[in-house]
Image (cartoon, helix red, strand yellow):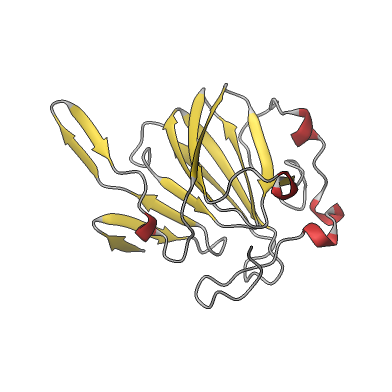
Length: 198
């Protein structure tokens, strides 16, 4: 854990390259102000070039999705979600690891940001009605919109939702063991830069 301009930044030990950011909250009688993203918080990341907003009803589940070349940065602006991350990257020191965490809600972590590097499968379950805003460092590329089964026992995700609502696309995602070899992402060392990246 370290601080950059009073922002608390933690690098996940469970999944290499995942970063959690707890920004400074400025409050006064009018309310609050939070800086939600600075590129300098994630050294070595590419420029975030697009912002997306997903609004989901309680009980909805999105994922697990992954990209070989695109990174995401998530914040939850309303509600509470359970996030599941799974490392698919060949050569990663945490290949096969799964991380589950909650974002949003009304607790002290409600403004937390989450950086997800390429090759880490990601998804969320809306534990309440929720809005997720995510920045991406690439525009939509159908060849890089990939997925793995949300309920794969090898991943062991704890979604905290009994009977989730999923899209047809997410219901059809393959098990990890069935992923095509050419669609398995490669680990990119954030320090040396070694590994696959477009």
